[in-house]
Amino acid sequence: MGSLKYKIFVINMPGSKERWEYVKTQLDGFKADYERVEGIDVSKLSEGELDKYYSYSKNRKTYPKPLTRGEIGCHMAHIKCWEEALRRNLDFAVVLEDDISIDDRFPEALKFLESHPSGWDFIRLQAETKPRRLYFKEDFGSFSIYEYIRHSGCTWGYALNSKAAKTLVESLLPFGMTADSNMHAYYRFGIDVKTLIPPVIFARPNNDSDIECASMRKKQRNFYPFARQVFSLRHYLGRLVQLAKRDGTGVFLRRIAGSRNILT
Image 1 (tube, rainbow, N blue to C red):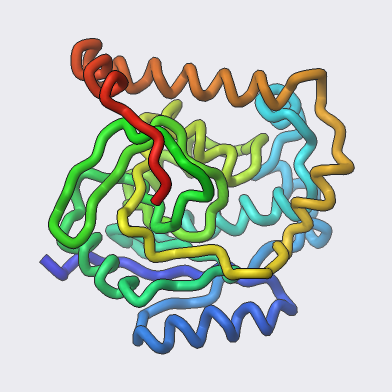
Image 2 (image 1 turned 90 degrees about the horizontal axis):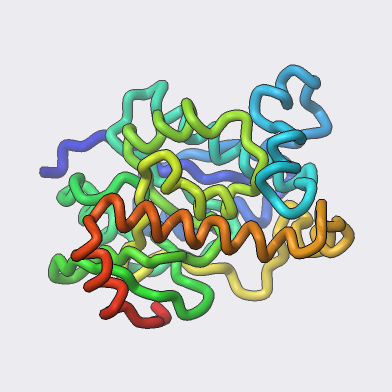
């Protein structure tokens, strides 16, 4: 194959020069074709610009806590990459955050995605943060594609094709969840989130997030008691229903019976 059009987009906040140099050095070492996408400072947006992407009422209905400015800006930056991929008519885009370490097999993974354009719409390139229950996998020699019942959060690195980008831009806006939490709910739009194994993107060690998630989330109160538990259960059950409808009851039950927790 090798003829697919794709681009690597790297999200980097204004002023985060050290982060940019760190990820840039890695990508330059791979001779990768990439470009920087500037992160979004929500405080500089007009009310109209913000309302196009973020809805507080939707936030209250669909997510346990109010989103912080950093979380809103982070999600908007990812959507900015999707919109740019559509504008350029790319076959797929690779979206990376700047707080990552990239494995030496990254160029090989890109070639794999080029040569295997079918079988995935949205594929995570990053490692899982804890054991997850494997639902189904396909092996392709040096790489495999895993599908978990529920994957970990975080949006360090992934690829999405034009179909997924178009569906998300048309269906997701305005959003009311964080970028990583929304990924758990892509099944609502018919998008199966899969994972490339072995992963090629990892969290950069000893590196704090630019979007103040950890500290701000602790200060934010849930909209109602047990909101997080309700959120997790709702989307876990929704995902199971989607899988059963997609694969048929027989296949679904066989795969569920054979599923197991693994860490990759």
